[in-house]
Image 1 (cartoon, helix red, strand yellow):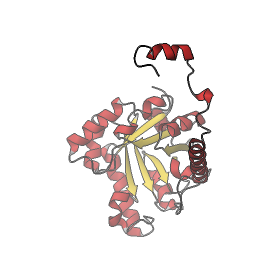
Image 2 (image 1 turned 180 degrees about the horizontal axis):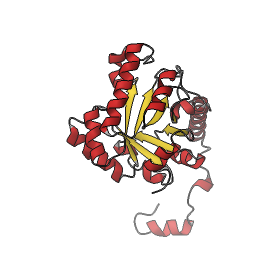
Image 3 (image 1 turned 30 degrees about the vertical axis):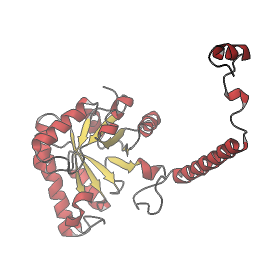
Length: 263
């Protein structure tokens, strides 16, 4: 087992801030691992099930997709499959009851509070959470419930920074900040935001380090140009050239058809 174990992550609490990235492609996972990322995560879907084994030296987390599981049995079956596929921890956006079921079986669970996209209607939509006393109390209560259920870490998404920092001091869980300030134990970004792959709106909490969207536009323009050149070569007779074909002795060709109607 390479990379930081759950025990290592817990031991780092209060000592140093960890870096965590969510990826969508294997090459992103490999690059993040090579760069020295502490934690890498992705959704546990068939197309990505091999990602963990591609980065054996980094702590890898598989996320249980929202809406896929109808009951605890389905969730634990998927969580066990994720662990078998190489995950060292599992993200679960479900209730404390589901989290408790997983934790009882030894699955290290990352839970989720604050702006939880599938549940955003309960907190007023896609906006910061915890700026009022009622919301702050709700977030703190949820964190306590998840800790009691056995989660080892909590993702806090767009939670007011002072609240996230205070919760970090009060909980034994590892706190993961997605737009919740610098006072958490772990900082978390999506690779698509970090690499600048998205066009248009960039979340306030995201920092873009490259402009992959522009690079993809450039590559697309190069594709179009290359295809046009190929089409022109075909129409003009410039492709294929002799070097693109396999030669054959004329005598051999003649012998092949001799006695069979000739030429």
